[in-house]
Length: 235
Image (cartoon, rainbow, N blue to C red; front, side, top):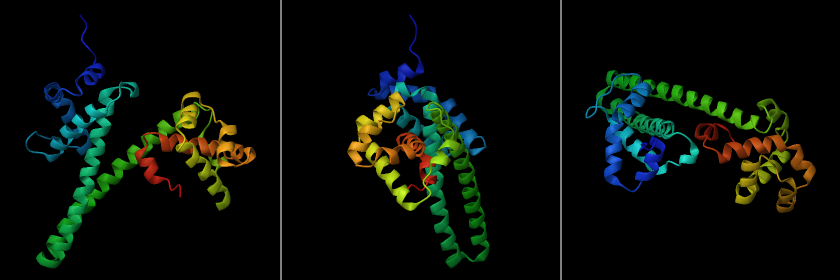
């Protein structure tokens, strides 16, 4: 009798706390390896807060995993990294508070030490976010290729005037609020211009002119591209 894959196993145990605990215990080495790669040093259970955060993130990944989205361990790795980034963001805020206290209570020397820690955390976060953004760009490039598009095509279609940009945003908002049209676009790789024209009262010509820009925006806004969404100013 064949054993279920990790993907199948996760889908089967979502509501079984004992099995979830067993799986987390079994995958402690994997969790530690993800953390160590992220922080760039050896970590130890019961000592490093990052491991506790990662175990909670692994449990979160189990609850949120959908087998249709691909490999569970890849999904769990991303969830762990995202939670660690959130952790370092919180730590950065704490450090900023410590800097303020140091300036007012402990003098210049301690303040300099805290600033050094703050700068280290900031640099680490920026490097990690930059890498995640790069990976997301590669994924978006693959999605655009399914439409026969490249980033250069999107650039050519980008609005040059504020009025045109507002029109494109109106089309994008309409698509994002229309599950049927959004599903058609994602599943069939087809932009239903006639339906969009009817729903927005925007002419076919204007929609077609912004086609590539609109498609790229919908791909990004409807996909799991956390860092690109934060980076691009749509409004």
